[in-house]
Each structure stands twice: as structure tokens, then as C-alpha cells.
Length: 215
Image 1 (cartoon, rainbow, N blue to C red):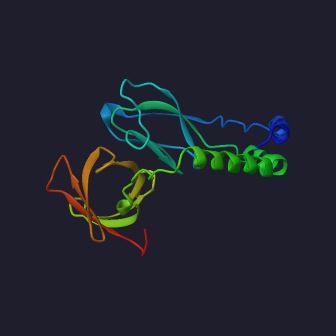
Image 2: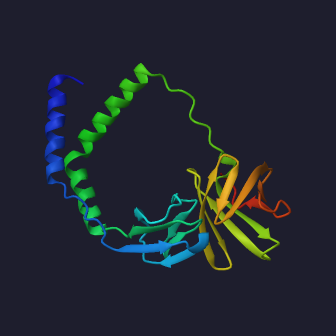
Image 3: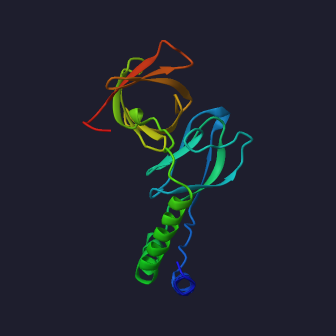
């Protein structure tokens, strides 16, 4: 990118940033406490967005392991006690998106393409980080202990959620371990899914079968 074009791009971007309104932060806050290290669900309208604002507990609050959320509220576990900001300002987000699109979309795309080409020339692409794609998707299993079906959804980034008997729980998948609430499972791939073994009671095994036709 030559000097004249670089200066023009910078000028347009500065003008766009000055015109774009910053999204207003949602003011709704929820305090949720895991008493005696137990699971607790605090109802709130999250609108699909929650941010941890302040921790009150000595136990570290980690999203997906000791806290998480769904549309109906926020959950905490393993001694996590904290304050959360819930919801988002859709109107401000929409205005900001429109402003960026009208003023700077073409310029930003050009800059991104130029940077990507330069990076590829200087640093040839390496192999992507290996992820366990065999356990990403939607699955179901029968929990003989609870005598109920468990529906499981695993995202590509390791976040997961389960649905059983009308209750939704969030968790995470890390390497060959799956965390759901207070439970930790060791997971092993199988032909149509994977086997999850409860590490606190190895006699409890859930055979998750993939739902649908693809990964």
C-alpha cells in the first residue's frame, strides 16, 4: 500500500470513528452466589450477553466451568460468587454497525486484504491448531442414574450446553475432559459420538450419539 493511499485510508477511518456512536452499556446487574460451593441459578433477562463485572468469592470464577448463562439467567457453581452485567443495547449496536458500514466498510476491507497478503508473504501459513472436531455438534444420551435423556450441544470453541428434564446447564470441553456443573467426565471417541465417564464415579457412563448427518 503506497503512502498516499495509506494516508487516505487513515483519514477516512478517523472520520468514521468520530461519527460512529459508542454502544451504551447495559445497566442491569445481577449478583449471583454459589453457597457452600453448590450450583445456583439466578434469573435475569440476559438477551444473549453477560459480562462478569466483579468477583466476591475467593474461588476464581471461570466462564463455562464455574459460571455461565442462558437467555433466562446466570448460573454459578464451585464457590463462584460475583456480579454480572446482563443484556445489551440493541439500538446503539445497530446504529454503530450502520455507521461503520456506510463510512468505512470498503476501506477496512481493503486494509484487511492488504495486511493478510503481506502476512502470507512474510509468514507462510502453518497447520491450523488441531481441534477435536469429532465431539463438536449435537448429541443425545440416556442417563441411567437420572433415568432421563440428555441433549448435548458442543460448540467448536469448546463451550457446551445440556438439556434434561427441562433444565439447561452450561459447561466446557477441554482436551479430553468435559465439565458440566460439578461433574467432570473423561471423553473417548466412538463411531457415532463419544463415551463420557464420570470421574467421581466411573460406573456412570453416558454414550452420546451424534444427531443429524454431519459435523
